[in-house]
Image (cartoon, rainbow, N blue to C red; front, top):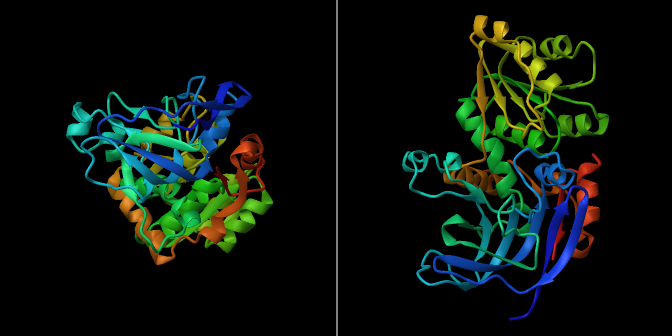
Length: 340
């Protein structure tokens, strides 16, 4: 078989394009040609050694779509030629959490494209067939590239909700924060205010449906957000998860409200436990997604609730993957895609 190219992050700050033999195809697995690979905030953090759950070296590319080129023994759910996107969680299916339908919390979880020996940032990839979702024909490649990242806020909204009629704050106007805004609007929130340090990102949030935006670096950010919201928040989605946003989120939550941690923290933070206890605030961790979140993500894209043109802002070839990572981390783009 013809050698393939694969991006490998070998050490903090070090990335290389390797040429290697294709991975073998085992029973229950599928080989697919990569079509689009999104660069995630987790990828850029991991490149610089700031992701707490991704060791070096790692093989990026969990936000991948592709076309099936070969199926392994026993695969009957997808055929050659199918357009697919990967649900990158790799559950064991035997532990307590998997048996309860919470495979995203699998006790033996591996993650395609994040600490696993395969990732989609390559000419092709091999993955278990049970981790694939067929892309509907009415979604083009750019729209399909948003299925995985959109599923994260869909999951967060579901487990922190219901959101219908609620007053909501979203911390962070990056890709996940803006997709969280789309979910909030789709789910019928009453009012939503967003924060971000970058004026350009705040302007995008207003254009995409935020009722108001506030500078996250303001010394009185809590007071400004509460004034813009007109009340305390029923749910605060923290898509940044640093010390300042966590404390602000807890201060903004109403008594009995929920603070949902959507962003991946780079390190532990401290929280005001007296406020947490006395106001009966729920801290809700939000870990990836399950198939029903993928289904809703696809439905939202099909309904036009999320438009690829609003989110996909830059394209790079595989040979310029480092430039793609830098563009993604630079703050001037929303979703950066790599095309082998």
